[in-house]
Image (cartoon, rainbow, N blue to C red; front, side, top):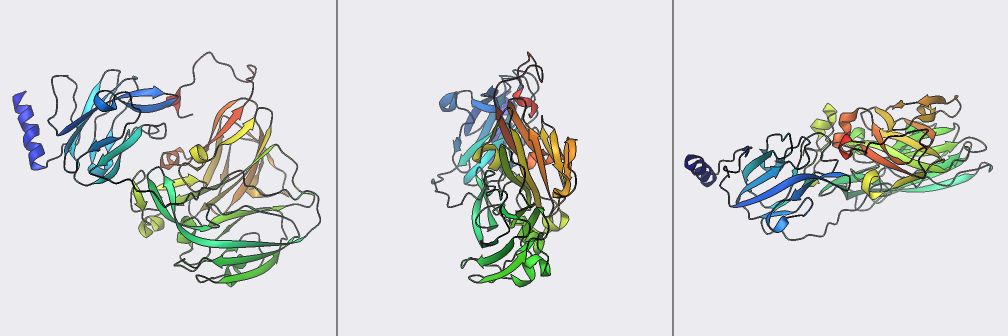
Amino acid sequence: MKELVLLFALAGAAGFVPQAIAARSADVTPVADVTFTLRTAIENGQLVFVGNAGAIKGQVNPELKVAEGAVVAITVVNGDGAMHDIAVPAFNAQSDQLVGEGSSTTIVFRAGKAGVFEYVCTIPGHKAAGMFGKLVVGDVADVVSTAVDVAKDPYQVGKPVGDRAAQHITYDLLTTEVEGQLSDGSTYRYWTFDNTVPGPLLRIRQNDTVTINLKNAEDSINIHSVDFHAVTGPGGGAAVTQVAPGQTKSFTFKALHPGLFVYHCATPMIAQHISNGMYGMILVEPEGGLPSVDREFYVMQGELYTAQKHGSSGLQEFSVEKLLDERPEHLMFNGSMNALTKTFDMQANVGETVRMFFGVGGPNLTSSFHLIGEVFDRVYNLASFTSPPLLDVQTTLVPPGGATMVEFKVDYPGRYLLVDHALSRAEKGLIGFLHVKGEADASIFDSSEKSDPASGH
C-alpha cells in the first residue's frame, strides 16, 4: 500500500499522467491535489453522472473546478448496472469500463492548461443520452459567447401555393460568414444563406418566373454564389452570381419542372462552401399545389470537416485534408448538433398526417433517411412529383445534392428518432426528434414493460 501511494506521489510530482487507474477496492486511493467522486444514474429518462460526495453531492453532471497544473483524480462508481466509463479527452485520460452495479474506476491526470473541457462517457450512445459535463481548469472568466444560432427552424416551410396562377416572384438572398453554435461549448465559422443552415426554403409554383437577387455581406472575406438545381441555365445561376463582398448580382428564371430541389454555393472550392453551410432547397409545387396535410417540416443533412475531433470544445477549425478524404467529424440536421433535439421541438398529434421536405446538402455522403418507429406511407423518390410515390417504405436513399418528400400518418404517441440509418453517424450528431402526443391505441402497440432510456430510442 505504501509503495503504491509513493508511486502516485512521485508520478504526480514528475508530471507523469497515468491514463486510467482501476480502483476496485476502497483501500486504494490515488494521490492527487483534488479528487471528485461521481456515480452513474438514470435521471428523467437520461443517463447521467451525479456528484457522489462533497460540494457536488447530488448535482447532475456537475461542473468540476480545479487549479491549472493540479493533479486531478475522478472516481466513478457504477450506480445503475449498465456499462460505463469516463474520459477527459483534452488530457488523454481514459478509464476502464465499469460493468455491474457498485464497480468503480479512477482516472488521474494533470490539468496542464487552463480552459473549459469536457468529461464524458465514451460508450457509444451514452454522450447523446446525457453523460457529459464540464471540467473548468484555472481562473476562467465567464465570457458571453458572440456566436449566433444558425440552426434552421424546421417549421419554416413557406406558404403553400394552393390553386393560384403563375406569378413573377422575387427573392433576396444574403450570403454571410458568421461564428455559429455547433453544439454545447463548441462553435464553427459557418458560411450561410440568410444566417441559417440550411438557407430558407423557397416555395413557388411550376411556371412561376423567379428573380434571385444575391448579395454578399460587406464583412465577408470570400466570394459566394448560388446554383439552383431547379434552374435551366448556365450553372443553375452560379455562372452569373459570383459575388464579391458588398456586391449584388441577379438573374431571372422560369420554373419549368415541379419537384423539391437543392440549391448551394458554387464558388471554388465548391465542396468547402457547401460543407460550411451554404445549401438550402426550393420547392416547386405542381399546378394546383400539393395536397393539404396537417404538419410540414423542412430538414436537411450536412457535414462539417474540422481539425478537432467530434466533441471538442471551443471554435472548430476547417480541415481541407479531412474534406478531401471525406472524413467528417460532425454530421447534423439543420445546421447544429442540437437543432432538432434541443433548439427546435418538432411535434405532431396522433391521427395527423406529417410531410417532410428532406434534402442532403452534403457535400459527400448519401443519407439512408429513416424515422425509427414509423413507416413512410408515401415516398416521392428523388423528389419526383410526376412519378407515382413509393408506398410503405422503411428507409429511403437520398444522395448529396438530392432530396425526397415523405408523408406518413402518426398512429401512436411517443418520441420518434429521425436518423441516417448509417447509424454510426448518430454518434457524430446526426439525430432529431419528432414528439407525437395523443391517446395510445393498444391494438397498435402494447407492452407492460417500461421504456428503457439506454436503448437509444
